[in-house]
Amino acid sequence: MRNVLKVLKRTVALKRHIYFEWPTNCHGWRLPELAAFRTSCIERGLAVYRVNINGCMYGLLSRKKARLHLRKSWTILTTDPTFESACGRHCDGMHSHTRIVGEDTQHSGFYTDAMG
Image 1: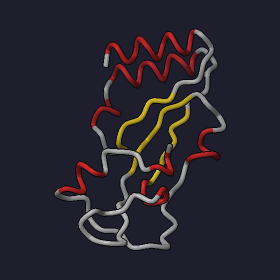
Image 2: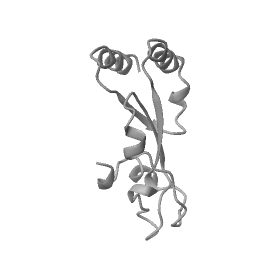
Image 3: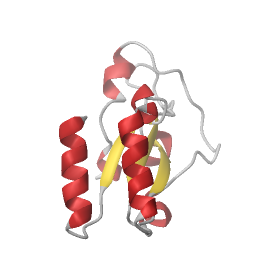
């Protein structure tokens, strides 16, 4: 995490947008170093957004259960104010989900083509 924060800080110093992603429920979001980085950005007048994305809205499907979606949630920390409107998608409830277990666990760790 120390090296990631170095890159994020350097990127912000160069006035470039950052995009940092982890699964929404990852315990890493609670790391004091990450919270301190976000706070320091805000204190310098740089807005930092938390954008949530549900993989099911990008076609993330189970490999075990045909036509059932996986509701994998990612959170992206970004300084880009347009990213949420362009990419933030929450499940619309128009499809069925299955639990992420077994081989779907590994499968859900990758982005779909639609997210690229």
